Image (cartoon, rainbow, N blue to C red):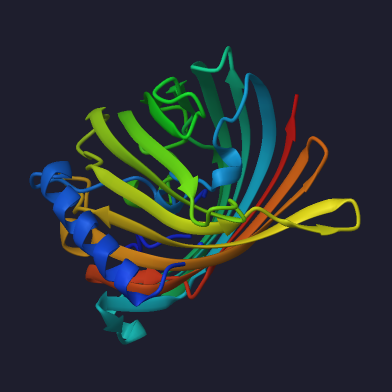
Amino acid sequence: MRRRYASLCPATPTGHPAPARSWLTGVLVLLSCFAAPGAAHACACGCGIFEVGTASMFPTRSGGTLSLEYDFMNQDDNWSGTSSASAADNEDKQIRTTFVTAKLQYMLDRAWGVSVDVPYWHRQFRTADDGGVSEFTHGAPGDVRVRALYTGISDDLSTGLTAGLKLPTGDHAYANFDRDTQIGTGSTDAILGAHHIGPLTPDRAWVWFVDGMWDLPFAYSGAYRPGNEVDVTAAVASAGYRVGGWTVAPLVATVGTVRARDSGAEASPGDTGYQRVLLAPGIDARLGSVRVTGLVDVPVHQHVNGNQLVAPAFFRLTVGHSF
């Protein structure tokens, strides 16, 4: 049975007015020309949005941050091209996923650091099968990400670079999921990224930041090759307002993703790959060494190949502790 899966998901770490979205879409399309010469990012549905973060996660000093991130999406709307399509055109009916990711970021000094992300996914999948609808539920560890961080470009740590690997630690052999819906991709990926943060107003009451990441699989298992993916966030955020003992800062960003089609005999290239722009308002709250960030990502533009399930919104909550 050929299954068509939605690759449109919520990811880890908001909005600009319409001109910014147009600019971001153009940048993403340009990047995709370099990112995927005929191959698609076939990571399990929902990983893309977690590739980039908010300014609260950027290194600002030596020392560490330990955080736990919760993400949720419910994909139940069949989509084709740039609009909703009949559910009858897609054998898959629903993909409901909860993501929990433990993250450790540690700066050895003001210039160099490391980060490790260890995810766990729980996925419920409903698909047409033999005249009825079958439901499968599976939970397992996901693909671990290990990266090196460099922030020594400027004295104020406003610009950072990252490079590392996504390791094939996630389960990619569950019998009732196809390869593009598995919790793990079965691939080893190179990760390259950069971020920059700067003042939007002279008093620094508001700041802006951009954060981008390129995921490039270079080793994979079976007849399924995950392709390249580019994720970019552009955002503005407040320095914060005092509410009791907390400092509460609103933020808003656009999050853009370009993912090409999957490739290989175990892939479904006709129904994978997409371009998407999300508008994501959120709140960042701080109390001493504790930081809480919540975001709701809403699609404002999405184009999918073939038929894929999409979600109306994606939800993210991160609780972190600095030490």
